[in-house]
Image (cartoon, helix red, strand yellow):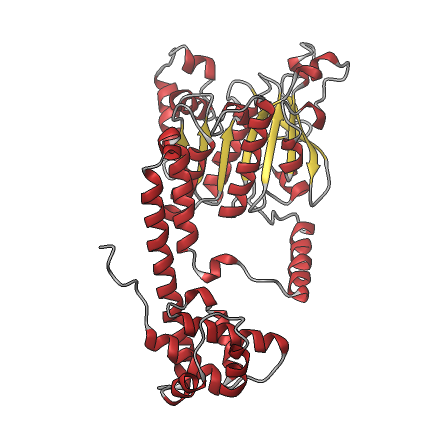
Length: 441
């Protein structure tokens, strides 16, 4: 197997070079399909293509004479001579097929990179690092192979300024009309303020214990899955059974009756209706014990590649393990934060991470949380594009309205901050849009 010749096409490499030497204006077309020096298998044809792109960058003419002269300097490594270039030009089958030749060279280049990535992963799997951290190695190997398989279009292209301006104005039109330009959370006041959760964003939802951050995170995940598409809910705190009971309670059967198994026929009918209403909602619950940054990334990538992904929710961040040993928990939380931000950008989906706030809140007269209350790492505040802080006054003041809740948008990298009113329904374990005055839930 190791003696096999890697996939390539010398004819396609010669064909695309011949087309460029005859008609240099075709360079833009072949670059559009992602052709690069690394896609060539034969070193001298790679050197010739590099010389062509170098001349084009300098604004100089491209033909057999100028390319041979550029190669004569030796800056491009092993290079063809003038006779080779003349032969390539003479053998061009059709100038009309330049893009086809280029696409074949790109395709074979990708295949060779995949083979190389798999071979490196296989070799590394025998090493001590892989044995010490199998899950971490699996994540690294998966990222390496995915990078090798990425199509040219996956790498992104620079955006022309006027096009970016047009997109920005169109977005402002939609936001001015009250539309969510990102992924809508289903909480209308939050969507109106933020424009929805944007692809590539890390959104941190912070709260003290018993405020309801898990319930709010689950509500948002359900809303997104019901309106947009698959959402992945990674629960490092609660098991799937407990989460299922919370979802069922949202249908109108009080949570205490579900937990105490004190149900009658009417309750069971309502539970069945709730089940049927949510049967087609693509919310995936992952309550695997010992959630790690590597396992979250692997599961999210697989779902994104298999069935699409609109949102990732992690509940909650401080319970996730990072690879390796850290002397300080702050360093570990910082690594998890950076990893979740990288995952959001890689998959171009919003990642919502619940986080526990420190006890400084309870030492102040005003119990409303602040950015500084994010527990264990200032890196959370730095990495997050949006920071939401959940507050229910009744947790500290028994005389306060049990249904009143505030979602404080404490950081919004690309927009305004503010306070979003919510209504908490304790019997249903749900947060909903704030009730208008005079409306009773």
